[in-house]
Image (cartoon, rainbow, N blue to C red; front, top):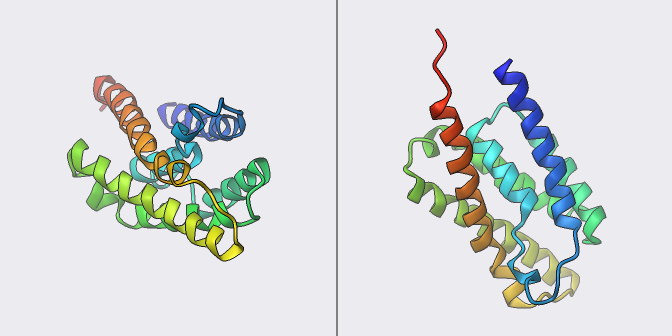
Length: 161
């Protein structure tokens, strides 16, 4: 029953991230928008790696490209790379304390933004620097909040034998 509830929570969180990514924000706070899809996929890749595969990251990236008007496949490639790395090293990363996990997530989100920056550069598209490099910082804060919220629930749940 708990595994089924976690599966539904992860599906709903992925759908909510697409909605959050497509909501227009005022110009003053738009640069603060975290990369919701990348943050949630990283969370599930590190905390429950067998829930979703790389195909989930690919299709979420295609959906994000479609919703945001980005080059088709741009977010899909970037999400594939960071989810692959998180999935490959999740056992090593899970033993880290929260501070080191936050640095790792910041680096992975920075890699995500760098891949988007690289593709945009090749396509001749420009994005202001603040809109490019502030989302990894806010995304790391959101990831830490998710970790503390969901990890606390797991620790408080009674152990069943």
